[in-house]
Image (cartoon, rainbow, N blue to C red; front, side, top):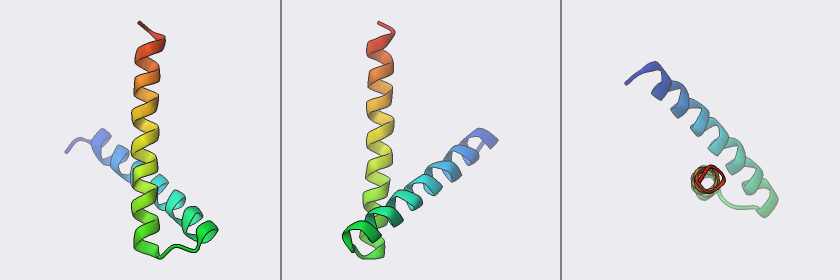
Length: 58
């Protein structure tokens, strides 16, 4: 694993954790479910951002 992969993994997990905590507190969801929702939100943002980048530059 390169240093870039390690940093990207840590940043992604950190953002997912923060989003999960916010979602969990806002909607009173249990901790594991909130973390899973945070991971899905991060994945969705990255996917939409990548698609938008492709559309803008084509």
